[in-house]
Length: 381
Image (cartoon, rainbow, N blue to C red; front, top):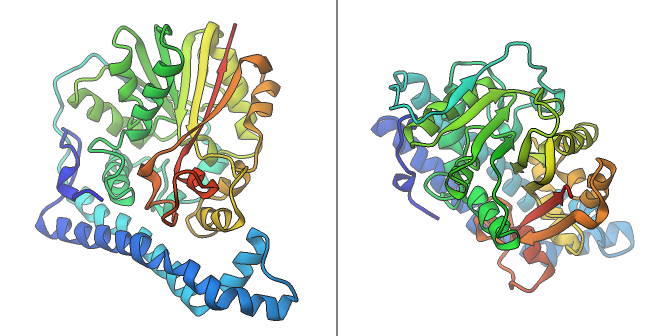
């Protein structure tokens, strides 16, 4: 866990006054108490009473994630824990929103060479607009100037306990390191980050490939407005544009590298295949698609699956559970990539420990996989 003051200051960041920061400190501390101290007690409750109570009623011990959920939801401790967890999540946003609402407009930073292009005709997919993902009021697509972006930037730092780094860019940095390790000779000239949000995972690609032209797209106009000011203030030239990842409008074979970070699990059963097919269409010969997201449930024990599924049940992540059961390699092949050029991997990372409700486990255990990120790479020959 980091301190709130460790978030890197930049031209767009809103932290608020002393009262705002006190509210944020409380939400930050509560979040960490829930995930770091209350959460591990769930296993104790399960082993000592919930499993036995389930067995008495069902006639067999709980075996599947569904069995475990039935057993735990009947226990008063688990209901208290889930209430505290949901409340802590909602308080994160509630502690940030007043500061953003009272903040003056961000000053224009010195130009770094990036651009911002908005489009009022963009079709926002229902799977993004229909609910407040992560319980963030208004969701990602509220067109409120740049406020949603400011709320998201500060809120994510609280939500992830600062473990994503001062710029919330740990996933982007992990992606850069993985790609350079596996494709050291790859030198893309044109990069596209889909579902870029405010650019947390976009900016590391600017540093990794300084000669490349970097683009970021999203359906959230407010996120893009904020992301543009943020990137310019940090001296990074990114071309942000308001586009739908299912049908971007870019020309065929117009990018060397298409990537996303923690995006695909928030898409639907129809949206995900369309996005992968669009990635294939956009790539030039020799191009690479790289997505970093939640890992598959394959090899994860029922208890670990049960804990992870809480994101779908209690954190407004309706596609999380289904996404982690998918065969992404098969979907990539169906999208037009040749199987021999498709790679799946796992990035183990402690940065998700507190946000993903995982217990302390040994690194070699199956449950440890839930602490990492899944990697899907596909290359065009």
